[in-house]
Image 1 (cartoon, rainbow over the protein chains, first blue to last red):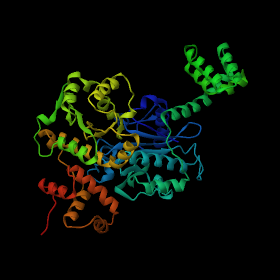
Image 2: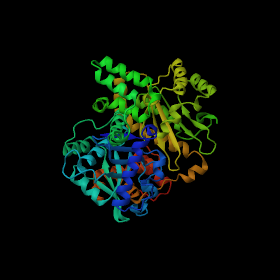
Image 3: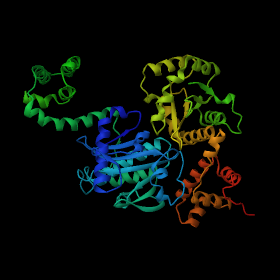
Image 4: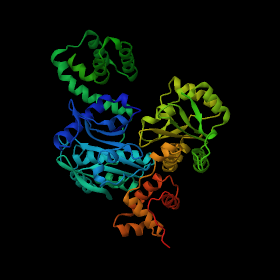
Length: 284
Length: 235
């Protein structure tokens, strides 16, 4: 599922963005060998400071498995300032109705072949649908995407072939980069949806994205909790109360009480209590 | 930081003020405004066709220091519906008073980023139902994007220095396509001649028009000739 993170909501999703920068480091630095700047295992450049829109894909476990970055072509963007060699010395396209898509990648370590939900093809399609629908809503009609030939073939095979290219493909580190044109249209979106068999709304609300990502965090944190930290008396009490709750009202009352006593827990403990009370019930 | 109504000092041929008026008349909004922050002085400058009483009140209260449509919208690349803003103290301060002046909080702001990282904002409002608002947005968003970039470029080009910096640089493709249009070819013809899709022709044409600040292709060709950008009209 897709969450769009921009300058307006980025403060709520710093941790998701952090995972995204790590994914980009693995893909563009390690796997593709692009000449990108990696610090502490995170790839980011100064275009990330210009409040771009990041279209991020989370899998059912809440992990970041794909992303793309969108910028307006009226302002500073990569084809104008970094990838201009692709344009053979020509000035870039500048239009309020054309956005630039860069840093498009998916996690090939977590995703497999085929067309199922956890495949490269599915997540690629999902990110594309999210980006095109977001762009269409903004009155944007075309996207110019900086991609490599491998991604280009993936697009061609998945009902999403670029209709043209700007400039010429140029070597960029170990691979070649090219600028592909794609229309942000109902037809293209329908074609991608048809290929990937996605007919649902791909967007998560901010709240849903938060909850889904937190789920991935709790799964990671649980073994540590099992090994070393026995539940405190207060936690045990709440777990028992939650297990004993028979109606929604009772359950809500327990949640309210947890909320009131927030200061007695670490944020992790609180999230764990609120989100997985029944899982803890077995340990109590 | 000052608030400057550019309409009182600008006498250009087609000012941003004309653009925001035509946004209201042609796209069906109640009010529109364009604002940008002066890159050096930090003043907020722009145009608005709000009632004069509201403009005066807005300025005298210093609402340009609080207004989320000025400070928040620049953080997005997409048009921002005002319903997305947190209804915090600043928002309420501005919009509670706006309401008293008959101005709704149903609106949106289109942010435009310029080549030097500067940002301009075109805002529109309309007092209407949810359904009507949704329908209107879907219908006019593309036109709003174009109006926003025109308003921004018009304001940015109004200074002499800016004019020099903003001399449009057309790519070979953009010039070539404008040249073929000047020869009377259709987009489909041009696509065939250059062996590219008609969609590509359109993208370059749109980009060329916007760089030249033109509303129509004919106007773009006129301006390109006027600027000596190597477009010839053969007789």
